[in-house]
Length: 190
Image (cartoon, rainbow, N blue to C red; front, side, top):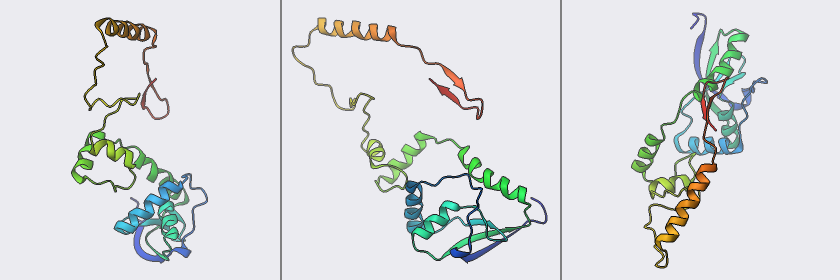
């Protein structure tokens, strides 16, 4: 960090903060509602970042959520001494760096099971229900956690016919291919 750059933490009137006209991020109602719920529950635990003219660089969504909540003040970190180019870079880099992480869904499931509640912000009740009640339907809606009911009239011939049908379907299926996105390097299976 350049020596001329200084950080100053303040509690500012929201009305003083100006949205950056070049902000590339679109904040959905769902995201703002989740931020409102989170800040209602835990408070504003991350400050909004702005320059010395109170132009928001990072935290546009937080600002919108606080306004929706009817708040008049916000925790803000004012960064002084950035060039215009540095401000633009930070505007882009802040969210890009956040999006570079991957979610370990096994760890998410473990934590959800430890919490054992349906009120986790950002997760649908269906998703949480699937984890907490160990529901595992396949893509056709079959729940393999329940024992299969055998039809007494189901014969070995029926089973063989079904197996042949599945083999024919499988033979006609295209195999998956993996490509690499030239922009971000992510492997995509199609």
